[in-house]
Amino acid sequence: MLKKLVLTGLCIMFLATTTAAFAESVYVTENGSKYHKEDCRFIKNRESQEMKKADAVTAGYAPCSRCFKEDLSKSDSKKSQKAVSKKDSKKTENKS
Image (cartoon, rainbow, N blue to C red; front, side, top):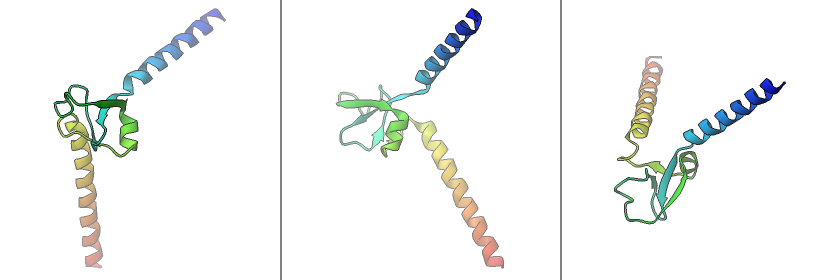
């Protein structure tokens, strides 16, 4: 019984720390439309507010082109895949 309690406690602690680690913090400015990493030169020496990345995306902020190149490349590849699938569907409609 004691082993189960200890194991359960360790599992809960592990889940809590991994959840906190994946909740990435980003920074936004009052009048800006992008979210940034803390060390971004675009927000250096400017007043900024820290928030979770998921919250920033939900609030409508876009990724900074300098800080989050990987996020932009993912969204660009999704957009290009959608464009290709639209072209393919139009070709098949025209053939009919």
